[in-house]
Length: 109
Image: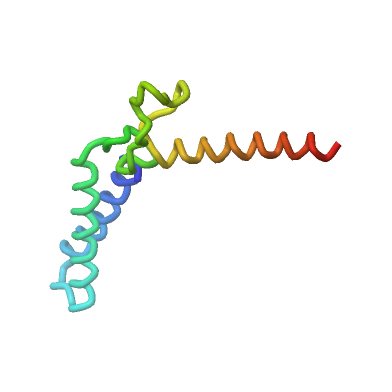
């Protein structure tokens, strides 16, 4: 998830926890469970924000896998490609599909 998503999740979870915790009455069993869940979500979102941008530097998959070809001098990635294996794999499949579609059209003539 992106930092913006984590930030929104943190805010929503803290608002929920605050609404329950600062109510005039002591939370019931069910409300206490909701409070506990909200605090866990807040903690998870805060930990994700504290972890930083992740190893890939990717906005979509900040904690995804790093492409093993990143930094390979013998088989370099195309210009503009980053470290994210998920994004690079999507680019590879898209390029393969374009080449396959172009070849398929020529064969039909």
